[in-house]
Length: 150
Image (cartoon, rainbow, N blue to C red; front, top):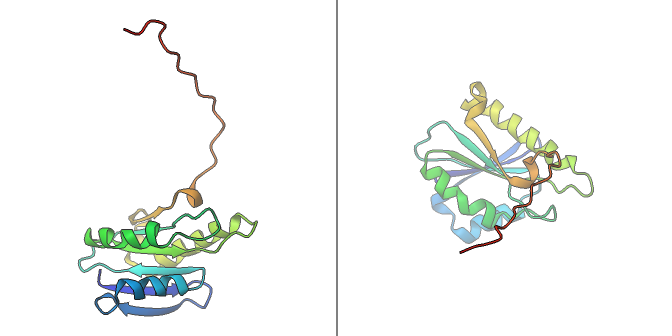
């Protein structure tokens, strides 16, 4: 990982950059935890391959699990040449559309400001609960056990 760029989506896209060689793990966790909701944490790679992934960590819509489902993946993705974006989205507070709105805004921001603008498929989104589409309720067939098992 080379640099961390923090982008606040709801503060006129204000940005702050950090050289990660000068920040220890405790300081990094403090930066992420103390940032407001609606912040993108963009981890750049030494040798970028032009692709990006946005991680939206879960937390039961009570919090975002930023360390174990976010920061822990940053080094792996950046070593592969990807720009890794950890997204601290807003909590829904009984409005489930709020995280979805944040995701749309984050994607638009990244596509507009990056080389990925011409290749929308070069930005991937990870985070099970936020992007899961409702599935039709299908009945599963019960598996039956054979009567005689030898």
